[in-house]
Amino acid sequence: MSHGRRDGTGGSGGWPFAPDDRAVSDVVGYVLVFALVTATIASVFAVGMTGLEDRRNAERVENVERAFDVFDDNLRDVQRYGDPSRATEIRLSGGELSLSSTTNVTVEQVDSSGARIGNHTTRTVHAVTYTRGETTIGYDAGARFRTDGDSTLFRSTPRFVSTAGETNRTVLPVVRTRPGDGPSAADGEGTVQITATASDVKRFEFPEEGLDPHAIRIRIESPRADAWERYLDETEGFTVDSTETSGDVVVADIDRDEAVYVRVIVVDVSYRR
Image (tube, rainbow, N blue to C red; front, side, top):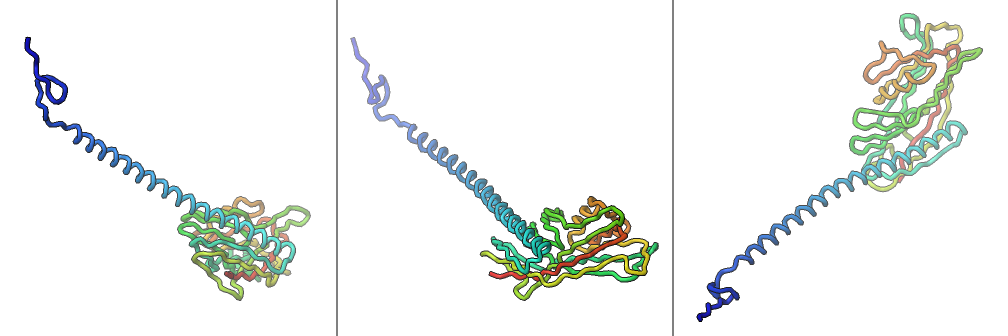
């Protein structure tokens, strides 16, 4: 009875030093797993960082909106209670504060052909704006607004009031912000204090004594004319004139015009670090 030889691997009939490719397979597997893990981490990191940056930018804009909400309230106190001065702090976060954007508000009397007659008043308002990227947040003639790209929405509206009664009356308060004695622009980082100081109050009344105009109307020339048009169109007592409204100009007839009172509150604005 014969016995088969046993090879070095414990099997029968094999070579004791036969080549083994299992080590090569382990290395390839390790490389593939490592590459997969690395790619996954890189993808998660890229997406996560982008999302984190977007969220951080959104939070910065929200902080500025909250600051402008406070600024709006402060100017309403100046407007209603005659407070001499108010200050609001805003963190720039890479944005720019400016007083370069202007809005012209005109109240005029016209005849049946639409030609201006008698006296009128025009006031130039330097809007308080914060711009970062394609977003602008600001305060314009009594309205707090936000612009994203080409679209502007009023976050709070002016306090135009039209009432019907024994005498149909309309009251138009206009907060005329303008550059004060300090810097009119600030950018970069850090915190800036917006100082608003009451300067003057002017009053106008229409129709002019001895004049019987066909209509009294308000004309607004502004980069935010679209938002002003929506506001006047949605506010009782005003009728937007589509033939006169175009581009950066919106014109509306004041429906209740037996007595029209214009109150201009002049406020000097400065930025201080």
